[in-house]
Image (cartoon, rainbow, N blue to C red; front, top):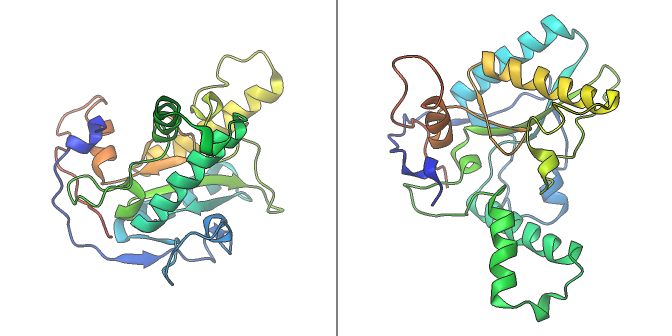
Length: 236
């Protein structure tokens, strides 16, 4: 169990609502749908009402600094079956990249690869006390695109299982190119934070608001009246 999963949940009952495509860049079909993820006619581009309000604020803040840039929502709501599918996919990819045949894996190797996967992917738990963040409708994976629709370089792709995914990985790099990656990540993080989100410690692209991870991260920040209870639980 991860530390944030100990946070209690009292769901506020807000519905999931669609992310408007005229305000945000959405890739369709979704990358996970292209892999065959079982959405069962549900869209990944849904979030809780309060999360959409905060995303809209983040968009406004971005335009104050970069008027022609846009927020791209890579992923938002993720049904539990999709979470399981992607954990399995990520596990197979890690094994493949290591050059190991799947049917020769020892139990020790299997656990090692699963440990790597779970550093980035939440356990697909059906327990209402420990929902995966994306299954709450309160977590989003986001990046930036320029006026021509091209992705702003961030130094690593979304979902990469590697140290490069750490938000501040390039902070002390002497390379001008890698310093630009860091500045882009900082810009993304700053505007999302000002809009009320917290960033995942291991993932430059993952932000949350109102779920267990958000409460847990809020408790490590300065200030009074820190939240104690998550108000977005699983929408399974």
